[in-house]
Length: 324
Image (tube, rainbow, N blue to C red):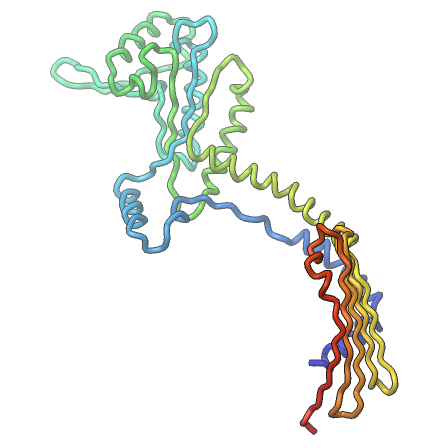
């Protein structure tokens, strides 16, 4: 082992400029090729593998399907009596179409795709609450008819619309995937971009967002943003600590490499103390070794080395080897 260390030390000293150059090239390369710290808050990670509760959870997923929703609430426009205005219904329709066409959404429910059942002679008929969203612009009679129909729909009241017709809700059921939240983050980011593109977040609408996908996206996005700031700060602090917390090491051998002198001096990063260590060893023969060691602690009251202030020492040693 000693031979290996000595060979490596001689190689580094002899080719120090080459070693420095390679080091300067490798450090930025390591930073560029480093992987981002992943984030995954999938439900399965909160259970131990084989947990009976996890088994029941997976059974419920298989039985009932997806269970997470992204929900958008929308209020009536200022100076409007209720939600049933052509402009507001168009906004609800645009959100509904967005979710309905997204690859990570498995079901969408809103006023603009709501279906109700009515009697038709001796039979029953199912119709859309709103047939043509564009035809409502100058058709107050149709809007009045829609109000009358929805007032009798108990399945829609307090789920898709409030009883006073002043608040409506669009619910998008999100695809369930095990051990990943990437699709939820993608859906949330696409949703935010859609709101900007359609200018729904900067108009007269009062919107409310909710749902686990939005929480997942915010948590991951903010965590990555924090890491992009914290990691450079940590690297900078480490560099500063290494710069202000320095040490010196002197190594010398002589007299046919029988005498070895080693001196180490370390100063603390907070500049509140230092440690000095000096050792000398002499190989009297190939089997007999004589040595002396001196250690000195110097520290202020609030230094981590303060409790060692009286532990300065001088140590003599004698070693004899029975190996030939």
